[in-house]
Image 1 (cartoon, rainbow, N blue to C red):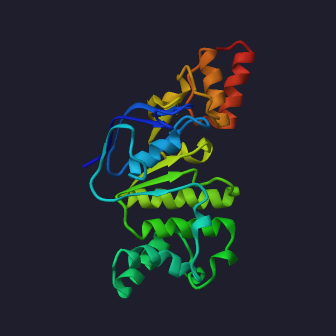
Image 2: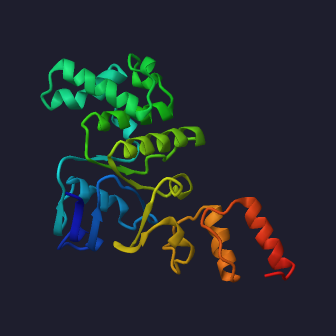
Length: 264
């Protein structure tokens, strides 16, 4: 059974002064095995949508349904690390769910590996880890619950390029193992190359749902920050030249030179 949202709307301070409509009649289906990028400007409704899809927030109207477990990783999830060791933090969820220690240990070790967290880090206190390692530890804690759908809100926020790359690699690995992953992020450059589907949300409504290549011809980009390759591809299209969304700098320079020389 897919993760579905049917006519989902949500208003904050409903019926009160200052009522704000965050989601406006969202219809959405996330199928098993998909890796989806949810893009949008600040205040577009990305986080609210993830909260509704995970069951953390009940929408004001409409219905969300899914089979199995949908887990949400909020922004800066490493702030919630609290145990004396990384292992204890990862195993907390399974133990709290009533699993025996041996089963919880197996889950924790498996989750650490799937998240790309080195085993030698498991006995350390979370505060001794790097920022990126703590982010992976927090991700492992979510994975330990074996969700069918993994929803992440800005998973690379505040990380350096190397740590961002490790997060992206972990998500690709999880997706290849069968987990559906939905990533809400401003960081399109790090996720467009791995996500086969992009959903753009603006003012609580979905304005685009398709592959990354569709962003080249999207008239209104809803104030999202596009990576350089997409900016160039859109500019070339305006000049009458088709170009892929992930055009290389060398290819872009060659096509721009042809325009300058009047050969196209």
